[in-house]
Amino acid sequence: MKILLKNGRILEKELVEIDMLIVDSVIQEISENIEIKPDYDVYDLRGNFISPGFIDMHVHLREPGFEHKETIETGTMAAARGGYTTICPMPNISPVPDTVEKVDKYLKLIEEKARVRVLPYASITLQASEQGEVVDMERLRGKVCGFSNDGVGIQSAKLMYEAMQTANKYESLIAAHCEDESLLFGGYVHRGLKSEREGWKGITSLSESIQIARDVLIAEETNSRYHVCHISTKEGVRIVKEAKERGLKVTCEVTPHHLLLVDNDVQNTNYKMNPPLRGVDDKYSLIKALVDGTIDVIATDHAPHADFEKELGMDRAPFGIVGLETAFPLIYTYLIKTNMATLSDAIKWFSLNPAKILNLESGKLREGRIADLTIIDLHSKKKIKRSKFHSKGKNTPFDGWECYGWPVMTIVGGNVVYKDEKIEDFI
Image (cartoon, rainbow, N blue to C red; front, top):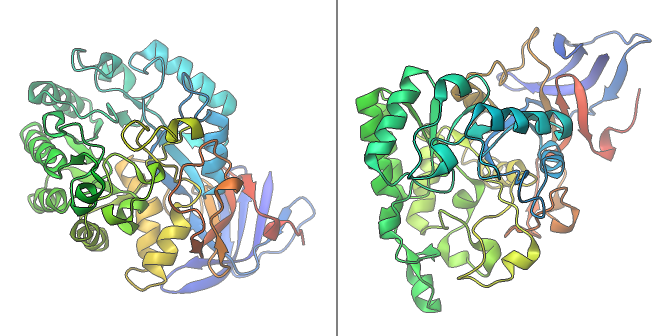
């Protein structure tokens, strides 16, 4: 297959108009004007921006086990619409992918149903349980992107120490949801003025930051690669910054919702997630840390739920919101267009940095590289409409927000997996 992209723009020191030829899944040529030949599939990009494909290090696909929330097909369709060429689903599925046999079955499902690249995590422990022993990382490491117990922070320091020792031995990544359960006190939103006014049980920031501090010290002792999932607190940022200054192999991600919303914005269960929306000081600490490089990656923590589950009320509804179809437009509109950061920064957060952390060859537009591409309309404005989501989950607090920066075409390995009507015209 040969695809010619005409009249696109790439980011060098500034946006430069180019043509790009893709042959058999690889970028063969990038130049000012490539001649059209009869065997080319040709698309006029009309000045839209070509980015390296987005990579989401933290999503939930729900299948197998919870298909009423999401499936591999619907989740990866949502990813493609959001511009993602690679996603990394967490292991909170049933059965838990904790052995080679289970992971192989999961990979077969992915191969059959996925619309984009899917690099799953295996659990850190058998059954993702505190009682379980560390999984066989030696046999699993080549099949998964890393190891995580996802929405459950590992409570035992001894167990995390053993996991990081093993991960370092096999040069594997530990990605951790950081939460000390002894400090939750039954909470389900951030402990702050809003929770006090509403009579909601609050979660203290300490529950996150104290476990980040513990894990960073363990990572230092074991020389392990350690990734902090969905950081939400200013104290956590301070700990990660100090770890990086000491040269530890520590990386970090943040979600769009923690960058754009605070606890006072919470209106209903579509604002309920874990970690919860924090205070204003936390939000601006996260933005500063993202811009200065303390935080490496924007990840969505895409967590679809059925409407009937989210209707159970603030105390009983499950944590989580969807994010794959809204992440880049939100960040581009509210951080890039407001001059808090640059388009180059956004490409680092969405593509280059996650590729580095995951040891992938993607993340840069170069001749000879795999053709994983996201084409983005930076200029048209439209509203987020949950009714238009490809995801089964409609649980978003951003319904109705007006955004720029919409992906209009997504290419994975040279194959067009999503195309907006704006790119329908062939030359």
